[in-house]
Image (cartoon, rainbow, N blue to C red):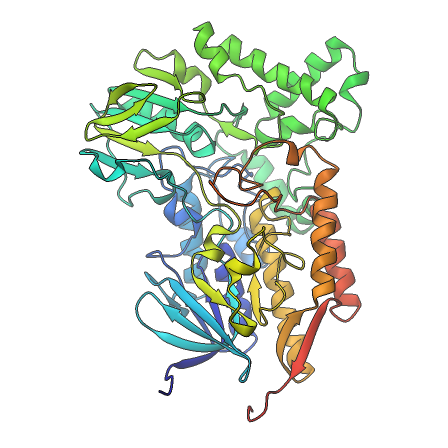
Length: 540
């Protein structure tokens, strides 16, 4: 039976910051483009994550697009670290300004995609029963977009309400007068717990692994700083791109060793950087992220901060991590540790006695049942690969992406994977992605992909793929760079350790400036590592 469907030059999956810019670039270059988004609007992670206290951990003036000077000047942020509603409003402003909505089909997910070698096109199937064909399939599905809800026995028997922080109701949740249990103390738990506690009658926090958190030191944005940045925005962006994580250039990064500092200097320096807030704490000394002995001093400073804030000594010790600091994503909070001084907040350690089951009235751990009106799952995401592996994507010889990646993701530059021609991933595994400013990363990738497509078209090619040796070499480079740091020495979602059965592979590339230099080198060498093929027989 003939397969009838619409045809486009490109299909972009996802309407977050990456998908919107990718679609904008391709449409502007004259290609026919269709976008699909499983949510009801633009914004990506900021559309779904609406939990109390949700905000960005990169400063507002940096977590924003830089492709349009006009956009940079006209938009004004209200806080140093933008709250979710404001970031979502920004995304909607961008969609309206550049007339992007008309190209997207919302409430529509990609369910399957099959590469046709004869025509060198992708056959794309959606949750709405639509089938379309395209030359290029671009996955802008995000690194933290596939929610991870543990498969607790009895989950469907709970008589109250359940919520996941990564799929929050659009109209919010009223916890007033309710008993609430929250499972998870990662970033979303740390951000939401203080606000839920302020509203709920009783909040019980179930913690498997304590996380390090540093005060965000958030507040109204400094208008003088805004004016200064806007007067020299281009230069501000250049300085940030030179940083390892592509942000924070205006804060001092110290290169000296904590091991060579006196006790007094260590205490003074750590206090100074604690005052800066958030990720900047890790820039207090140059060897915190490379040397375990140096790392210990940063750990102990934070643990002592926790002990000084939390009044109950037993609770304070439960909240003190005994792992390396910074090898998991450092959290930024507003009043998290002080929340455990409230009479209506209880901390339950489930490290030795995990949640056994969900019951109609609550949950059971350590042989005891806790009763709740509401259970909140702050259990994170199937990071980096979850959204890419959810649809059934098949490349050459019907190879499934899940089978190709059965031992962990393998890519070239985090952009493509061998045997899957014309399939691109924005900020995929093997790129700086979650270890850098994500908006800067998706802009960089979208511009690279758009330029590569234009270059291939100029060569008369319909197919772009990756040479297997280039992929193999890049995987080893990513692994080598991670081994030079402390990142692989923690069980973190960077390695997929939060998802049962997921291969333990460190997925991001460490170092945005070196990655940028590699992309430039690839371009200068005629897109080295990529291969192209000409127009297929019978195609015009």
